[in-house]
Length: 95
Image (tube, rainbow, N blue to C red):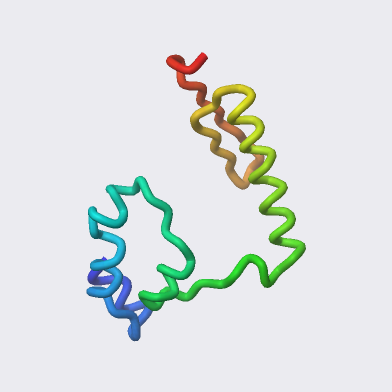
């Protein structure tokens, strides 16, 4: 991180990012979401999905489909690639 980020984003403060996102008290080792305000606060370039209504609707529709599928079929992992190939994983303990 220390090497490539300053090359790509010369004005970004690495220490600010490290303090915000590598802090176990706030992120609990990946168990907490990162809000867009948190990301903006440290200088990351964030574009609001709500500024693009048709894209926002598509993302929310897809999110709803996955939420229903995960709930109904007890999938714990769904991966799709750009070739239309899909991998579903169902946790054997949750069947």
